[in-house]
Every structure is written in C-alpha cells, then in structure tokens.
Length: 464
Ligand SMILES: Cc1cc2nc3c(=O)[nH]c(=O)nc-3n(C[C@H](O)[C@H](O)[C@H](O)COP(=O)(O)OP(=O)(O)OC[C@H]3O[C@@H](n4cnc5c(N)ncnc54)[C@H](O)[C@@H]3O)c2cc1C
Image 1 (cartoon, rainbow, N blue to C red):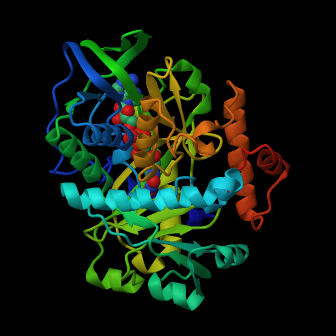
Image 2 (cartoon, rainbow, N blue to C red):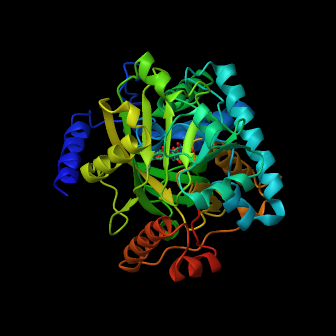
C-alpha cells in the first residue's frame, strides 16, 4: 500500500510538472485575435460558434453561394474549445462507431457509413485544396484488446483487419495487448487547432467575416429574419446556424438534450529514437483500447504520445467552468495507465495536461433540427466524436435552412431526436450511476448490470 501511495505521489508530481494547457493551442502558429463585432451588422447567414461545426458551415455556405454574405461570431477564440483540445482522431463514423450506428439506425446504416466515408474524403480533399497545415495522416485506428472477453469482439469487427497478440505487438508494442483490429482507412490523425485555424483562414479568403470575443447573448426572429444580440452590437441575418456544442444553446428547449462531460488528456515529451523504437508504431495509427472506459492515444508530428480518455466527469447542473479543465486525480490515473501500457517508457515526462467539455447526448451521435420557423438550424450532441462529423453536421444544417428535401434531410438520423436527460438532481445521479456501472462492467468481463441493460432497452445504452 505504501509503495502504491508513493508511486501515485511520484506520478502526481510528474503530471503536475506539465503545462496546464492544450498542446495543440500552445503554438507559435496561433493566429492573432480578430476584432469583435461592434454596432449593427446585417448579413444573409449568421454562424454562431467558431469550432469545426461553425467553421465548416461558414465555408460550405460561401463555397456553395459566393454571393451570400456570411458572418461568423465566436464568443472567445477560434478553436479554443473542444475543437482545439481533442485527440485529433478525425473519424469517418457519423454515428459514434459502427456498433452504435447499426443498433440505432439499422435501415440506413450502410448509407450513413457511405456518407461518413465521403465526408472524411472531402475533409482530406479540402486539406489539399486550401492547404490546411494540419498534419493530416490517414493512418486508421488500431483497436486493442486488453481483456480476454474483448478479443472476440475485435475478431467480429467488420471492415477491420484482425491481429493476434504477436501481430498487434508488431504494430505497437505493449505487454497489455491480447489482440487488435486495424481499420486502416476510416480515420485520419490531424492537428486539430491547425485544422480550425486553417478553416478560419480559408473562410476569410473566400469572403466570410469572422468576429472573435463576440458571444451571442440572445436570439430572436421576425418575418425579416433573425436577430442575434452580442456584447457590443447586433447581428441581423436572414438565416442562422448554431454550432455551440456543449455550451448552453440559444434555443432553450434544446438544453435538456445535452450534458457537458469533461474528458482529459496528457501529452508526453517527444520520444527519443530509442524510445520510439521500443514501441514500434511505424504505421502511426491512432489507438483505442476496448473497455467501456477507454483510452485513446496517438503520436504527434514530433513523436510525442497524446494519451487521453478513461474518466468522464460530469458536474452538477450542466456547469462548464475553466477550473474544470484541470483535474489532478484524473491526470495521475491517466499517467498510471500510460506506464502500465508502455512500461518501456518509464522515465519520460509529460509536457501538457488539459481537459475539455464534450456535448454528450443520450444517443451518442449528433442530432439536428430547426427553430424560429425554419430560420435557425442547429447540430448538437457529437459526444466525443465530432472532429470529422461536424463537417457532415454543417452540411445538414445548410440543407435544413434551404427548406428543400435532400438526401441528408430525409435521413432518419436527421429527422429523429435522442431522449432528453432529466432535470437535476436526476441528471447528476443518473450520470454517476451509469459511470459506476460502466466501471463495474469493465471489471466484470464486460457484463452489464440491470441499470445498463435497462438503458440499452430504451435506447440510452452506452457501448464504446
Ligand atoms: C478532450 C477532448 C477530446 C476529444 N477527442 C476527440 C477525438 O479524438 N476525435 C473526435 O472526433 N472528437 C473528439 N472530441 C470531440 C470534438 O472535439 C468535438 O466533437 C468537436 O470539436 C465539436 O466541434 P464544435 O464546433 O461543435 O464545438 P466547439 O469546438 O466546442 O465550438 C463551439 C464554439 O461555440 C462557441 N460558442 C458557444 N456559445 C456561443 C455563443 N452564445 N456565442 C458565440 N459563440 C459561442 C464557443 O466559444 C466555441 O468556440 C474530443 C473532445 C474533447 C473535449
């Protein structure tokens, strides 16, 4: 026990020596701040939110119709929130993975998979076309089994190459791996902040106006269109897109559908050539282990390891607060798990530690709709897999605003909604009970208790 405590203290010291900031945002390439919106401004399309969702919506709207005036307002800085803090796994899945998608949308799952692949291809094409300097590497994801019961699940995974223990360890070497499956084409690794900054620059190049430090504080509409009140002005628009993710929606009736859940990340110092050789990882895949509470990890361009996930922390009352970006207990736990996975890297330090809020909804993939008699569109609830899917969500929002029936507006995924979460204290008690149950399931070879099976039965079950 004393040895365990001493080890934990040592790891706490190690992680607390890291800089409390997103590795991606902590960059000399960060653009300087854009002026806020002042006075009264009018445009055809207003976009609220300067993460991936809003940026893609502005870019795609302007590309489709260069004559349309588009203004994007961002409450803080472009890409400062989830879009600049994530793992950088840009996944083709629109449904938070195949298991979730097949279960929720069996009739159109193949269509959603095709649309997801087209979406990822289009992100790759835009990266080339606009020259986003976002370290795009289409490496795929390696899912790894660290418990016996997970091996058969991986063997059954469609579209992926099954690897036995020797083969998976030849890819990435951890003594904890029992098997793996490598889906080589369906995920790209990106530098997410640079993707956001590149998108913003591309938007401006084709004529989108971007205002930072411009939180919208109110939304109203009349026959002429939409009015957004901001701190120093008013933005009037014929139509508006809301891409505000985990933050309180300007359409109040949407708030019960989302709970902000915090996810945490560590990044190591760059690996030396010898350290990298001890892990292998020549194909540079993103890696995810297969428990309900899972880790995701990857190499950065300068060969650090980004290591995130596992804990998912919800604060009573759906509160988002800067102080929640840091959680020493979680960082220590992440470091413990890191060295269990890669004991050969003992002694390496961590350069960055951070957290961020995820817009969790009860079906674990985005939902869409309109408000203010079709003048406002929203996409929300990406639940931790929105780096790629936000581009699809942007297309859906623009199609919904067009008032036309398109392939996207007719999807069941677009026409249906998840179940809302209950009010407090039930939301808090519910999330804590589910977390506890998932932890128990991870300790009991994946066996789900009564609560999880009940939630599965009403379509609120979580399975990574
Ligand atoms: C730690 C972490 C790791 C993750 N890892 C991955 C991953 O590896 N792969 C993956 O696919 N997904 C991942 N995600 C999720 C992914 O980052 C998000 O799904 C995606 O970035 C969402 O983009 P967004 O534009 O919807 O939201 P955000 O990037 O959060 O942008 C929303 C913006 O809206 C602005 N805003 C809100 N309200 C207002 C207002 N009233 N007025 C003006 N502006 C407003 C905010 O300031 C913010 O900038 C992760 C998330 C976190 C937190």
